[in-house]
Amino acid sequence: MYVLTNVTKKYEQGKRTVTALKNVSLTIPDGQMVAIQGPTGGGKSTLLQMLGALDRPTDGTVSLGDADLSELGDGRLGRIRAQEIGFVFQGFNLIPTLSALENVETALAPLGVSSADRRERASAALASVGLGDRLGHLPDELSGGQQQRVAIARALVKKPTVLLADEPTGNLDEGTRDEIMDLLEGLWREQGLTLILVTHDTAVARRAQRRLLIKKGALTEVA
Image (cartoon, rainbow, N blue to C red; front, top):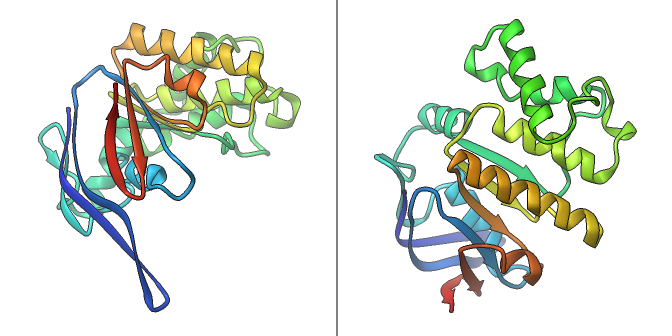
């Protein structure tokens, strides 16, 4: 379970202070699917960084289970990111010189998994997203939808409890968008993940159990 309490995040931009999050309090139960919407610059990415243990609040606390992400040292935060949180991005973020299989294996390297086990688990993860016959393909030999499937496999191969997706369908056409959302929703149900999506696409957001709107750093619930 995520619990955010009175979270504020401020950045210094030259002589100006920008408040990206304003006194945000939020609870997300384990296994919930949540969509976060809002205008560009409204605080969506900053909130996702807090949830992903990629940044700390200026004020307030961010907890995941028993771990206070706002107080832990960098080493412990790194282990939480490596073990418990999967990330999927709009731009796929695949390494262009590595095959689909090798890209997925990279997620297991920090966990001390043996080479044979990495290959076995990565192969299974790619099969689970429908790419069991594309293991040796480089990213530029795959379509956009297939590249995003590789990225999803990479995020899930370490068996995280949380999946954070930042505009996961933003670079895809409408048909491929729906295929990727079908895949994510299916994996969420099968694996009992906590799935948190940042999206501009209302059609994507409406598939979530819960919708949040963040604007000028302030968070509200969408009925």
